[in-house]
Image (cartoon, rainbow, N blue to C red; front, side, top):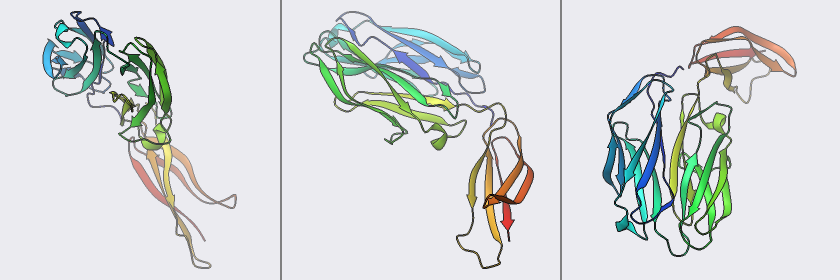
Length: 284
């Protein structure tokens, strides 16, 4: 169905490490991926849970985006620590978070510096999430598992990178994928996902919206029939068609084929946009 609601995801990034007393700069992008104009009264930077910087209201038309930057200068007090920051939309409550190391960290301390992903994908696409890990410590470190979770769960359809080594003070990048978009989601749905480090415990979250095709998109949702019928009885097969597109669609022929022979047909079956239609075919 057509996009009718506002949807304002936000992404933010900052350096993985800064010197004590250096100003922390956090850049953000907010995009309206919905079908209606969207507004936010305030966009805030929270450092260790406290609001430290704010930008005023923003109004975005569909598919419009806006960028901005926050700064936090009182970093000397966090020397040798990880600084937790969050950019938050005041009204929608959506957030993008990260960590920045202040000064040299002893040993190895691997964090997710950034993740990059599309704000929307086609129903037939594979979701790809690029990540960059940064080692805030002085020694090389290895993360056993960099894991992509979709809707909070692991599955055979999402990726895990094993034994990812990050040099001391350096970065390592990779890509994780989820290849069952059409099997688990419908157009208009939102995929919520996280990239998680098993050993070092850092987590980064994101989301992507499944695009709704402009034209019709019909598919056979289901077909059911009894397991047994009486001799010389009638076999009835019930079916459901779904239209995941943005306009009404018509299927010229829905056929019941038995042993390579067409035995019954429904013709010109119309399915409204975003809706389903059921029918039945018989043989006997």
